[in-house]
Length: 365
Image (cartoon, rainbow, N blue to C red; front, side, top):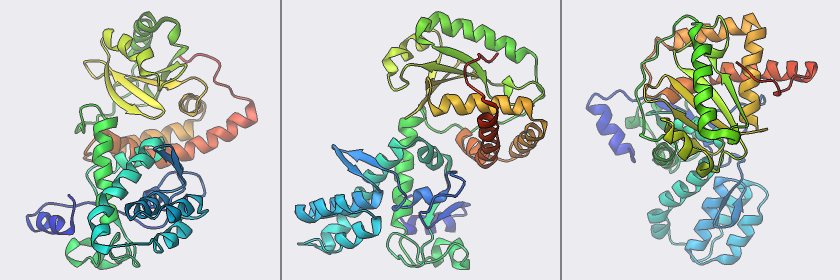
C-alpha cells in the first residue's frame, strides 16, 4: 500500500490493519534495535555512488539539492554534522520548485532507505520483521512524512482520522518489499510453528549434516557448530536443526554457495553478514557467517550461556511456547518477537564471557 486512501479503502472493506508506530531517532540505551531505527535521523552511515551519508536525512537533502542543480548546498549537506543541520540546509536549496520536489521526493527517500537498511544487518532485519504491518511515523509535527498525531492519540488508530500523509511510512514499506525480495529468496512464507520437547536425535542429525557440509566445502568450512535451541539439552524447540558454518568471508558467495547447493541445500536468506541455506525437507538450517565476526560469537555465546543458566533457559522456552500460539505472517516476525529477550540474555552472557574469559575456540556438538 502506498497511500492513506488505499488504507482507508482496505479498512472499509473489512481488512484488519496492524500498525507499527515510530517517532524519534535515539537508539535504546541497551543498544537494542527498536522502532527508532526507522527514523530518517537514525545514525547509520551508508554509502551510495561513492559518497558516504551519516543518515537517511542527509541523503534526502543531498539529493534534493542535486535535483535542483545546487551542487554547492549539496556539498555542504554532506559535511553537516547533524541531520537537523542537513534538513536546514535542504530548505535553502536554490531553484527549489515544490511541484518538482513532490514528484520526486518519495523515490528519493526509498532509494536512501534501501541503501541504509540494505547495508546495516540489524536494522534491516528489524524492518523485514515488521512483516505485513503498516508502518506509521507518529509525528505530531509532520503532516507530510508523518500522520500529524502521536501514537497515543486515539485518532492514530485509523487512517480515516490521520492528519498527515505518512509518506515516510509508505516509503519504508516499499523498502521492506524490496528487501524481502533481495534477502528472503522465495519471499514471505507463512509459518506453522510447533514447539516440541528436546530430542536426543537432534545432535545425531547435526553430526550427519556436519559430515555432508565438510565433504562439500572441505577446508573452506573453518568451523561447523551446532547452534540454536536444538543444541541445548533439555530445551524445547522447533524440530529444525540449526548449524553454523564459519568461512573466511561470508560476502564471497561464489566461494561456498555453489558447493552447498550441489550438496542439496537451497539458499533462503541473503543478508549483509549472514546467509542461510536449508534442506529440501526444511528440517535443517545452515547459517553461514564470517569467522571471527559478531554473528559467530553471539550465536555460540548464546548457546553456551543457555546450557549453563537454567533460569534463562526456562524463560526462553516459556517465551517460545507462548509465541507459538500466535499467528505469524512470516518466520522473521516470530524471530523478531524473540529479539528483546534474546538481547537481554545476551547482555548477561557477555558480562559472563568477559568475567570468565569465555572464547569461541572449542567446537560445539
